[in-house]
Image (cartoon, rainbow, N blue to C red; front, side, top):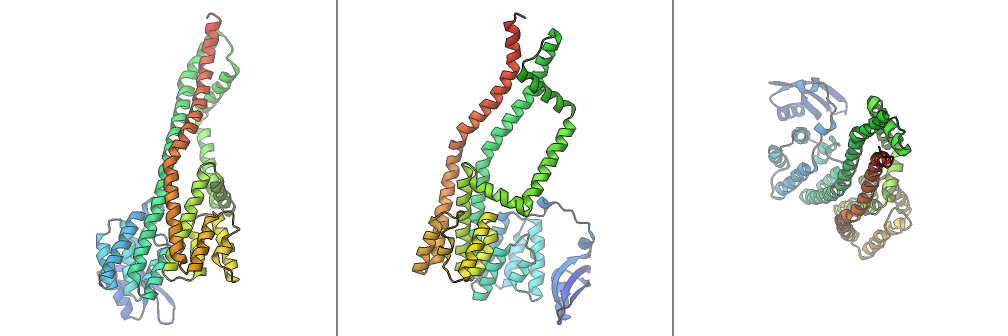
Length: 403
């Protein structure tokens, strides 16, 4: 028998926290139910007493794992298996430890009488608001298997776009790394030798070279101060971006970046259209859908535009007319939305819009390296060429003086 720490509510809705002896979490949940208690959380006493280690990368559930779980659960429910049996069967096949731990708590909550959506809602870090809302809609309409299938499709599409954007950024990052490496090598190896040669000859270095030598000497002697300043700058920028004002500035910048701004805007349009389509198709009301999508787009500027549109929709306007004058929305989106509204198939039309912009993003990412390559080559040539000139100028100066 093991000791479990639990929190539960009694018939009057009073929260109770205590311990219970049972063979496993499922047995503990059944025991609590027999005592007219509704379990909320159940975990072993040993795990509860451990000091929490806040390392986010250790507590993340990869999107791929979540998609596989969602699709498998949809398949089993569609095959006619009971809900609890389906979750247990899928849970046994899960590899990710965090997801397996969460699913054991979900099973305990469902056994305790909670709905599947309510059980998922207790773990927002793994199952976000879109996930919970679609599951709740599926439970209400009796089409949980279809809602889960749509959810898996939506997650795959969203993950594919994010993966393409990350892939597009790899090339510029590599080139920037090469630039930094070359500059550091020249400043730390070649430049000091040239400087020492001039000192031995009691000659004055050219101005450009003196500036670089001063920078090199400062970094060499006060590298710890440079490291602290850079670390402090990164920390300050990170905190600023996480603040309300900073997030708004950063999200606005992403929409107006050269080359990347257009791609980001299409990503947000695809995300808006895909998520709205899936939620409406699952029977979720328009205002509730927009409230969820506002957060799902992951951009404050676009989210604010959706919030303004929500106010107009509440006042009786259509979604298409509410989005018409929003600068952060590409005009095609409200135009296609209007066609969907007139034909009575807004969810289907938004799905087509999402597919169009997903293809646009795919094509833009493919062409990105072609566009970025000459720009990065020019930057690389200017930076490295400038350092080379600063290193070779003193040498040619000495040669010109016959030394």
